[in-house]
Image 1 (cartoon, rainbow, N blue to C red):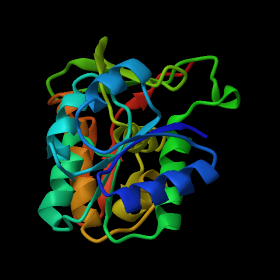
Image 2 (tube, helix red, strand yellow):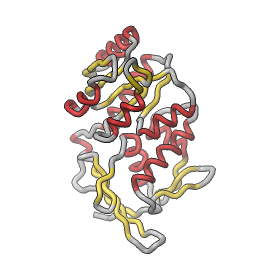
Image 3 (cartoon, rainbow, N blue to C red):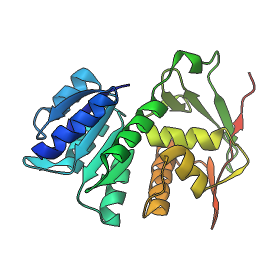
Image 4 (tube, rainbow, N blue to C red):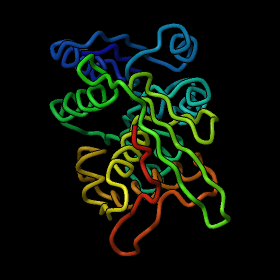
Length: 237
């Protein structure tokens, strides 16, 4: 499985989380406060960070913003703050998932397993060529998107772009279905792996982030009332 950082100050809850994740095969490092987490992430590069929002020495959202400046390591927020605005804030920061307390330990384990599985490249997934798409914009310019699954990096017109694990999954899912309309339910089921309250807003937020990172060109068309369509064309190898 993977290396998971758990940042949770409730001793009883954190012990249970660590126990369940270790039984599932993960190596877990526990923190009971924000102090030291940022430095540990820089040094150890975990596969996933399970991060409480309300901690004794600071705000988990603020820590996540710092982490996002140095890495796209997946972040799963764990919090009692259940409002839609809090969820959207989490996804705008770049969270890959958002679990509201109280929750099922089994559900948490499955979500952790799912995130790590979709962000880990196995030998069997290595490709001999790097998928590349071109887009002829309305201004007459040709733009290029490259997504290297082996290195899990993407570039737009030769400039690297930092995508979260979920943003990567959504963009690749759309690109591999170029020209076809993909609805929000498909994106939720295949890229977020669950249906949640406020899920449509979550997809909208992820899409907003992806478009901002791609720039102002017209890679993704919104089909109002249904979903999205990727307008780039794959370059045949």
